[in-house]
Image (cartoon, rainbow over all chains, first blue to last red; front, side, top):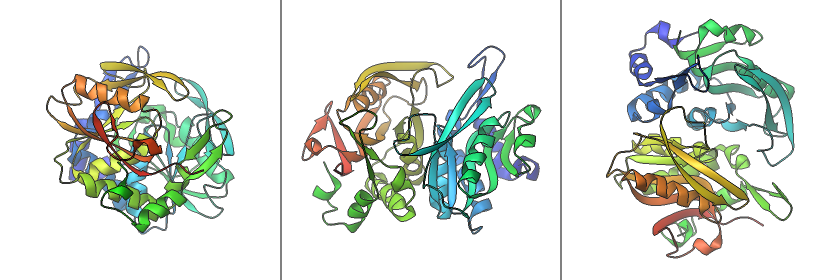
Length: 182
Length: 186
């Protein structure tokens, strides 16, 4: 589901603050840069508020954020809805015992890790990242949470690249995004 | 300066924050007692108190920039920025920021690295704070201070959840004051 389709008046302001950087990290890729959104306190606050309004009061106890841009949006959402924040990280960053999940990226492949014990069986969780492209990273994140026994309620991203069909790779789990970029 | 020396003596939130931090011995190498803040993020009250203490300190200091050092500075900085109405500026490892950047090299507690900031994120004369989870040698924070000063910002203070005891009292980093919540746990 896209808030863009719902035409909340805050969406336009958010969309205009996202900068597109051509040919990054390689030629042909139009990179969606959210750092310019973070420079506008009102637009950044609106972004967080849209997610908080959707998830508050839904008994979500875990917000998992994907390194590193998921760390920017996830914690403010977690704090506002009363949930814990769980960082999902690249290999060898988390110091304690971890579980690992490999995945294929839009450009390359990688592995995501989560601390053992961060999430308990039966907890209701969100996965947050800045953007969904092919859905590979989000799928790996969902797998980690489900392996720990959590229920992934929804994946939440600021931006979707619908042409890459990431939405179809989420094992039927719902996806909520604020803006689409074609 | 530690929060407990100045204004927050005996504040029970500080003990709860300290207790929520996990020590992982011999990470990333033997001999290092790694201060793991991920357990703090699992304790909603302690995490919220951490952010609130920084927000209470900075909200009336006319700060327009909160710069956070990748990646653990990203866990605390944005919430502080949102609460005080400042922009959040990520300071990142090389080749992560897509636009034009300025770079600053530094020496870590364990290795060397380089920090980058987008050109145009910060304007001349803006008042900034820099946030990271922990200060050890101060190498990363020094690089961050230099990046902000190179674009003409005024670094008002560096804020860290954890800091080594040598930063007590009036100890400064590159002439800038530090504000730290707790010491490392054993």
